Image 1 (cartoon, rainbow, N blue to C red):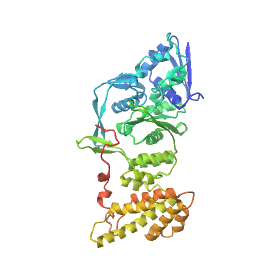
Image 2 (cartoon, rainbow, N blue to C red):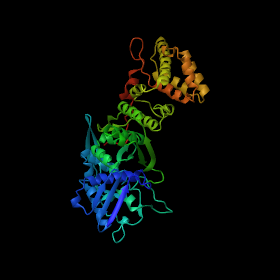
Image 3 (cartoon, one colour):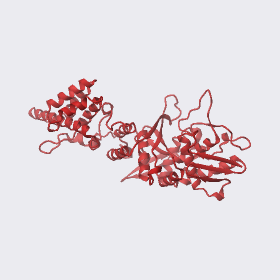
Image 4 (cartoon, helix red, strand yellow):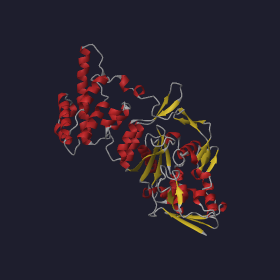
Length: 491
């Protein structure tokens, strides 16, 4: 008789093994015990497997009841996937665990799939799955007599981005860990990123029975949920969805690891190699902040010149999410972001400005007040000269002035000079407070980011109530980059 005990608290397991054990528990929950040559028992922290006879026959029976290929999709009965869910799961696994061409076979001709998003329809090209590693014979894991090998070689289809060592050969695992990794795809969540990249999220699991119940609630995924702006955002979105679904705070998922996959210069034949790994562990305050940011910078339906629709992903959101997962203020690094990106989504930045603490808000309002005063001066001067105000030129002039300082002393001097020359109600009585904040704990770089953000997101109105900024600047539909550069075409 063969017996295996897979424990999520085994000190020799990693996060991927623990998630794989959870995937195994999920698969077993949907199997009829009368139809398989093995028995099992699942506790809160362990999965016990037992069978008589050949290891290979019992294991293949378990795998065959878990993974099938039906109608061109990787079908997993335990997940109970709908039409969109089958596509997102299959596409997710193909671009992560099965990214190497040897691990799967797809149809040569692509089919067009359509998904409804709001009032529009997105069309995707999809090559049907004909065969893959999870539906094969796993011959590398067994001896000629059908018994598990004591050490089983692994490659990249077990852990995304796992690379064979040219000196020591393939990574080796025990049969217990090998079994858990075979079921790892069931526990993961998948996201498609821009620029032909993908992300796989591996959750922390602390209670198998509770996790299985929760996973069954979130088995389906729409195409819109499948698209993400970055690996960092993928982790935040996963944790937010888990928080919403979680009934028992005691067993909630507190962190996850996110593998970002894409092209690497050292290998031109594979499209989804490991580029980065993020560990995302955040609190409820950050998740609530991300939830608001997602509402402000949600994906937009766009049309190309042929009238075909595609989903444009925010450029602001990935930068903002990277700050959140690193524990930085959400606006951190706006100085560099503004230099590298064509600014748009102004309305979203305006709405995000409500999430500043008291001192940050005081400084932010003071800079916007001074800029408003400066802008009125420029409008009056332009009117006297009988010309239209060149708003971008006026804005860039102030931004360049605030970007130039490279030390705390120079920035503080430049900022104080700007606030003093262009006085406003927002600066009355707070001068000393702002000065002290600028010189405390190296805050000047935060202040520089805030100052540039205050000007770039300015949407003030004149005394007559009319906007001071030209309509073409305020209108995001005209300033958003509608090209498909940087995005995987949705056609």
